[in-house]
Length: 543
Picture: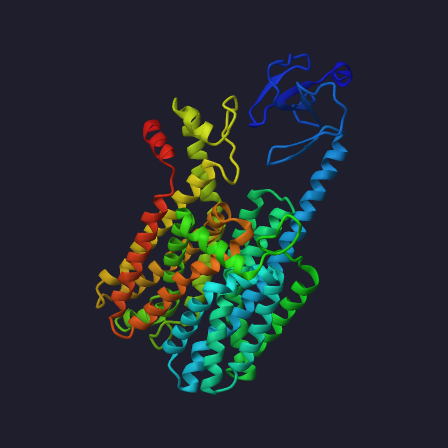
């Protein structure tokens, strides 16, 4: 009251929705409303130079109470204190974000270094690439049933340390042309692949929520991790080439050992430990409890089981595509025009350049993902505002109908609807792209360009839907047993890849892509089933 009586400036009242209306400092506050408000003091040119947060229900309270609308940090105090609190939270999040992304980048760099020359090394040793590749995923499928329970028992940080140690051991074994060593490395590699795609994400989600960061910021890290993965893959190809030139075929594996060791040191010294299923007294449940809890959750919760099948189909398709894209391009390159980009001087696919283009496409997809998601959310928000049926959806999302926009949280119908729609669209488009090699005329001189373009577009879609799949898991899967559930569900992925690779020996490669197309189509249909019926009915009425 004292400030309002002495400051002769225009003010702008802003509700929690962000909708503002101009008025003077003597505007009356509706006593029936208890929403907190923010006042921005405007000089004559209309630029805000100060802020004050007021609440009709707390005008007489002492300063120091806080309010957080999920987007900004507000404090009933002077702006300096307000800004300081926000800056501290932002710095804390940026530090956490950097801790995770640096380690994840190092791990993906090591994986890319050995991955780019793994099959070349096996062929040089004279062993079947397909058999060893399938062996790794078969071992991963068997161990996925209990790996997650062990991780939740010993801790996610400890599991990352174990992962790094096992990867160092594997990369040493790969350097020797002994079949028994390669078999052991592939079996252990199946285990570490499960850890790579589960334990890092489980640690991230749990630690993010333990530190009480906003859920919207978790989406940012998941998107950044996917972009980092693709960006590092581009760099790894060049580094692997340099190491192979300098030290021979084993050079990239020696480089992978060094990079993995650096990641191991960072994790061991900086990361915090977190567990699954911690008791109220701080005790940690047994491995048997983790297994029972994960199995019970999957069998009794149809939603989580459906998520596991969807992600098993999509990731299985991606991993099988990794094995199939090079022979498919080689098949169609024989009839292609030599001037088409993507071919080397001998008329063969330029595999290194194509791989780099794939990874760049993934980066572009990751960059486009938040913009696409925001565009869909804005479209739905406008429908919610304009439709007379918006009450049903607003009540589902616990949103104040007095607001002029429709904010959501991580468990809100808005975010779920947006993520499910975008994922389903990506899966449908992926199915069409996988179907392209099945229908093109192999004798057409432009077939190589058509097939390569479809593969590049698929990599863009991967950059979009992979982070969204992480969001889906964070919404529906409980923190306490997330790693146990994720690794148990990877049984689907591992065996899908195993049988997919084995079948390539007995069926034409175009039939393999047809099966991948069907897998992505099935994933899209199952993903659409997640869209709440109220939102579908609402959209039809609004249209």
